[in-house]
Amino acid sequence: MVTGAIAASMVTITGLLILTPLVIAGWIAAPHSGLGLPGVVRTATSVWLAAHHVEFTLSGAGRIGMLPLGLVLLPGALLWRAGRWVVRLGELAKLSDVGYAALALAAPYAALCGALALASRSRLASPSLLEAVIAGFLLAFCAGGLGGARALAPWPQLFRLLPPRSRSVVLGTAGALAVLCAGGPRTGTGAALGPLPLFPMLAALPTGTTGVPAPVSAGVLALPYAAGIVGGILVARAAPSPAVEVVPLWGFACGVATGCVTGALAAFSGGPLGSGRLAAVGPSGWQAAVVAVLEVGVAAAVAAGLANWLRVRRDPVLAAERARRLAPPRGRPPASPNSVDDGGHRIYLDPWADAAGDRPAADRPSPGPSTLP
Image (cartoon, rainbow, N blue to C red; front, side, top):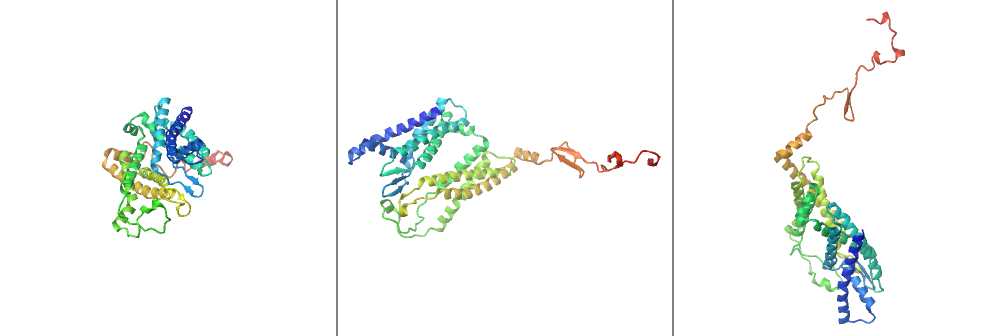
């Protein structure tokens, strides 16, 4: 934990040292009255938080949260290096230990981002404390974790270190996301715009109303299902199983992972640009996640189940394993109506248990000549 705190502090200090000279250069080129050295440091801190996609509340302008995504490369690269340093300094050798290293880096880094959000507040701009903590933790955990994993071994070797089922889900998720990214960009689909406020960034939007071609519309609607089919096939190919009823669950897990990534990207790509009509710009993160989980997950589950079933039919080893699983157990006597299974032990009941030999002594006839046959 101490190593993670040191790495988080170094990332924060390095980022501020990189941004502060740039802010000073801008301040010298276009000086403003009342902005001294504390204001320069506060501005550099605000830019550092903006690189984490932290929302700001501006006096008289509303909330600003839709920021350039390229800014995240600076803290991401520094956290990547910090994750590698933590793993190497700790001499970690197991892939399971990388998660603890990423957590040891992300927790103090989130606390530092929260402290910066409190320190950089002014009467003109106020960053969101909650978003600073959450964004700092997520970015440090993801970037630091990937950097720490890369410090163990090259990517192909790391992929082979994963358990077979986890490796299949990761491969299926990557395939589904690749299909979504490849089919997402499109031109010539048309647009229908309502009244928009006068804002310079909105001048590039097309004017008028044009129809969407039917083939393009059908392709867009079928894209999530195609991504799910690709992901499900990859899941079944990476880790086939004779238990055909279990594989669809892992296909659906691939869809859940794809939906979570899609929702996070959707939330990260939007944000407010002011008040009124600009208070909510971009897609809804949770809605995109739910839709992606349902569409991609169901398609992946069906595709994984069918692909695995065909693989079992064609593979004699898997077919023999499935037949062995379905065969009745050997070495036990056949069950009868007068038997009860008690924890794996079969107990046979005597149908004549109520005969005279099982009656109490008081109810038994006394021995004598009358009892003889």
